[in-house]
Image (cartoon, rainbow, N blue to C red; front, side, top):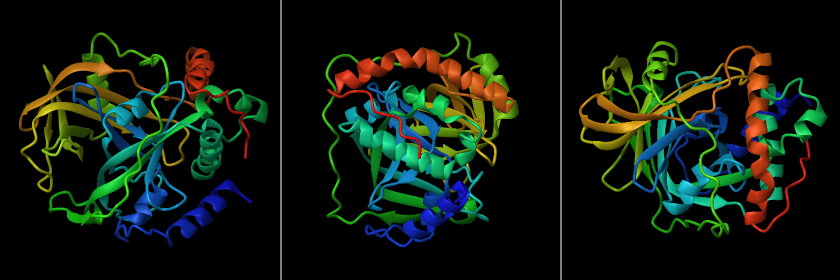
Length: 341
């Protein structure tokens, strides 16, 4: 069976079982989205938002994202502070006509107590969802990519879902709240020893990247922190470069009373997920529509031709592979076997 056909059947099966009662208006996007903007909080309370591929838990009760064992910061932030958000504002690759923009705020549970099961799940579901990302790669090469395929999962229990029908951000959102008896699981235990930290530093000068992002990467997502301590990512528009950062327009359907530590995230990918670009800047919003940049953080961009993107990807692997055994050891486990579906 062709991988894309299998993916379509999986989505159809999933759409029939959501025991928590998520709104039917948003579940097609949950099922089909190739990218979601995942926001978590640093120890200092600054939101950090990155595009990641979203999945739905097999029991239909959580929205899940993953990060590599060798670069666990996204998961470690969520384990320290489980208040996270997922913004589904990028319809590219979904095949949906006029999908909503959807914001999920919820509590995260980090799963890294069974790395083999995590890895098997990621291989199975990612090969179904984005088969073009692995097309043409020989099996022997894929088996050498444990530095990438060995995964930590972050399971997000939605507490609030806001959506803007047909993506019209000029109107107020629709709202769904989780039942009062919603069970929110706890994360797996904190690994022993010291975290490896970030694997890729951002450039010393943020302005060249900011200029490129405004010109080439489309409208960004600005993330602030709301009054309940949750990240609140918003897709903004008409973004322009300013001497100290960015100016942008906030659509009428978003709140305009959020200020303080912030993150601005630019990203893009083609319909078939064979490359990606993303740039992330941290700073603050102290005046409406004005983002002051503090720094540009490291990104994971794979751009250009398929060959160039593959070469860049494998170069990342050479930096990350030495972390693999130590990160598995910190969790009392051996490195999982890569079992290609």
